[in-house]
Image 1: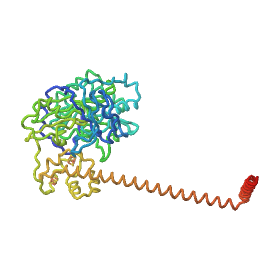
Image 2: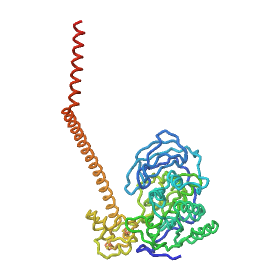
Image 3: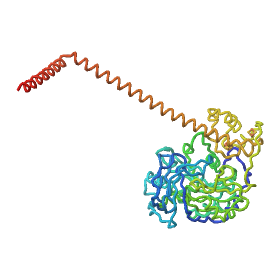
Image 4: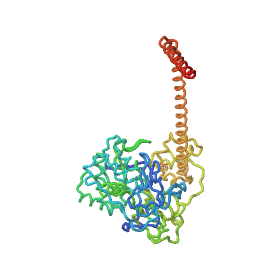
Length: 510
Ligand code: SF4
Ligand code: SF4
């Protein structure tokens, strides 16, 4: 199969996959407490459906989607809702946010699953609604609600190609690799369901060439499945080849225009873990209550991949992997390139948690003192998104947000390639994250002020209209009084009033 090369990237990052990828996936135990941040996806936070003291079952919906870009949340085991309160969430900000906490009862009683007998007999809308109700979001780390991605009503486009993203390019992470090795059949079934939903004509399962055993396992499963339009594609190991736009370029040679989405060029790309979750929702009737996560790094005794219930505190997982080793320095959610440090190990696993990196001192990238930019251009050569990091940096530093937006800042995938190659050790990604947040805040404030202005103008219009209507009524009345019929009406009214007066004075005389 012909492949293309995207710009930049890092071909020689140390992989560190073998530490965790050689062991089979194991199910982590039910923790005593499950914690669910209400916002664990892109879009609006979910709305709680339960109250403190309420009993819940595994698979029960405990929070509902709020709007189209949102996702419901389901309990991963049975127990009692302890409270709904602010708790530390896994986020680079280190903020607290509303969470539902469930004290588990150890019984693991579940709601009865309701699988679809045959997805081919269901309408596309029914399938999309099933994916939405199952609370599925992108499990590669993006956490975008999958139903929204699949919804042909909102994405009225002609999809030709489906890409199953198994290119796990970030060092240390191997959860998708283990999933493909052990559950390729279910992933292929999931691909068939998605092909049916999207009407796509071809599908590629992308696997990096540093995982030949995984590629063979998928090839074997495809052979058994005898589906000729789903193909395994072995792609070069270059960081960040698993980035959506970079993978599309690699497999199809097509560029997704800046600020655009792949669906507009006829392609949908979905992480393999998400595809597995879709298969489980449609064919097994199971909502998303667990995921496979890599627990790795020199700071944990037995690195491995674990099937973990969403909401499980990280310390339960570490214990399951035989505890911390003596060298632990930092806890990172995600990989060393795109992950972020966690404040403690009580923070729960959320839908997007693909990896917990328990890093030793040697594994932590130490920040060196930043020096002035020497305009070497290495950052631009390394950028896989074809951006100009040096210029983005200058304008971000001086809060010239219009300029950074004009330079397509929001196409930056925060891969960190520019950081790695910068000889001046400038923390470029930090500046880009800052600029993105500042622009989002500014846009939100602008939106709020537009809403306030629209409301003010609507009120002024209403008051002016009421005033005009009153004036019109008064004018009509006056005009009517001048007319003959009105005179007769007035005379009749005076006559009636006089008659009443006479009647009442006669009654008084009696
Ligand atoms: S790599 Fe660093 S020093 Fe070189 S141009 Fe980019 S920001 Fe400047
Ligand atoms: S972090 Fe952004 S600007 Fe830097 S290389 Fe990656 S995509 Fe380009």
